[in-house]
Length: 223
Image 1 (cartoon, one colour):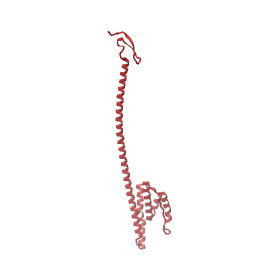
Image 2 (cartoon, one colour):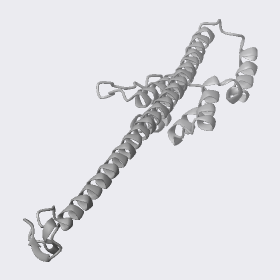
Image 3 (cartoon, helix red, strand yellow):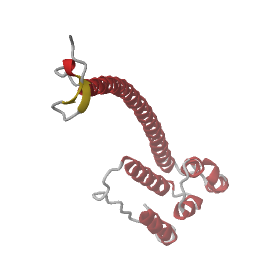
Image 4 (tube, helix red, strand yellow):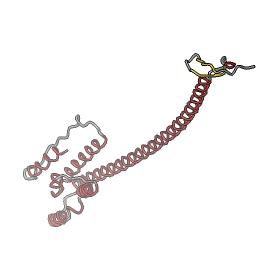
């Protein structure tokens, strides 16, 4: 027969319990419950770690996808800006080339005019009068300067004074060509320290050299 007398039982973990004498050698119920509790906690932590790792993996994948899309969009914008800059630079080059061609044509026409035979005094005086009256109309150099002022925001009081003078087409063409060269170099970031832009005012007495001197100096300083 099993003895049912209650006895005190102390396990290795110092848990004190009462149990029948016949079951005094059994396992500690408190230890068994603590083991089960620790196992439940371990399993719960394992599940939480697995869920956390899965969320981190999804987050890392989404982050990589969004970063790749950001890099792609930045590349598209960069290519678009480079294309616009290239088109703008090409258009400016075309405009500069057209202006230089017009300047060259003006110089050629001026030289051809200078080499034409002299007309009779009466016709010479009448043609001179017509030329003076229409000077501002056919001066393509002044037209170019007005175009630069209106559409490209150019401004220079010395150029305005120079363009208002009658004749001097060679002088106007040369100074306008110098300005276009300097503007192009500034846009392209070229070094102009080695460039020298000097002028010599030549001509007989009474040809307006002294009158032209001030705007010429001002233009050189502004350039």
